[in-house]
Length: 328
Image (cartoon, rainbow, N blue to C red; front, side, top):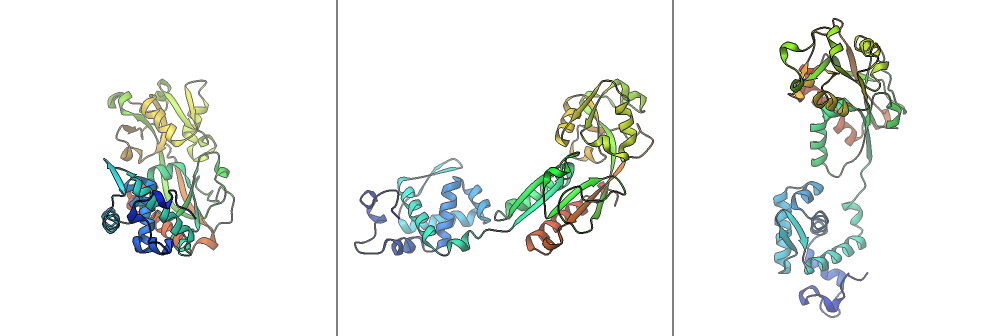
């Protein structure tokens, strides 16, 4: 395979001696296929920090490895522009040579061994409120994992498709997985209490509604799918009685925006104010409690896979760290 620049165009240092095998020459210059991999990923990312995350190595190790490569070659391979990197002319030659080595090497399969896919389907509010910080942090540190993440939205659980791990919200006594696939017996992992919430910027504490009738003075925001929940009947009756003044939204994120920016009152888990300081709960509006449950299930054949167990541990720790948010 020819390099992107002909041998006659390469700097003298980057040309093997006459009669010497080109592949062996580049192996000697790089020192190892790991160095090749480090260099190619950095060239592709154009940023040390991003490349280090992709490689799951410390940025200092990556910088030292590439500095030694430049020292060994006696050439500058990168142009530094703030935090961004671009290849020099010599760097492009080295990049083409590295790509050739990787493509020709049997070790390429070891460097890029395809990881098994883990499919995770999670109720939208659980992902947004409970799992997001830990999950994104874990995926940054384990960049070689292959994870397919699907949000389960109220009303469209079947849209997620098959998954190794499913986490969903159901009314009490209705724990069956609301999606396709063969799952182990579900485990109840938390109880959620729902309360009306209002944006603080649109209300003063002393004038906030304290009863159902006082809701008539406000727009109500209803999450699509909540109307089918018997556990939320007190709220749903009030919404159904309205001839107007109800905004139906299709996602948890839109519900939050309607409450925070649209002067609406909407139903959220009672811990919502811990996550958004501009939310105020209205626990006194309804006399009847409104509680739903969070359930989790795993495909039995996947439960003992290392990468699945790691995600299950992460989920368990995320809920345990917030145990004061939930009834268990």
